[in-house]
Length: 66
Image (cartoon, rainbow, N blue to C red):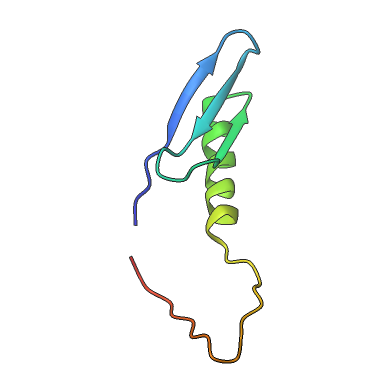
């Protein structure tokens, strides 16, 4: 799976911001472009890591590969 990452330099704070258009709220930053890329990779992993949920006994959970 590939996810688009946008990295932009912000001269006001002298750092790079990174975000994923397909993952709302998945953002990060770094002092260098490389650091921003490494940080957004970690943010994507955390964003996609499933949370524990409470389900009723009749609920079914499926996992799909995309």
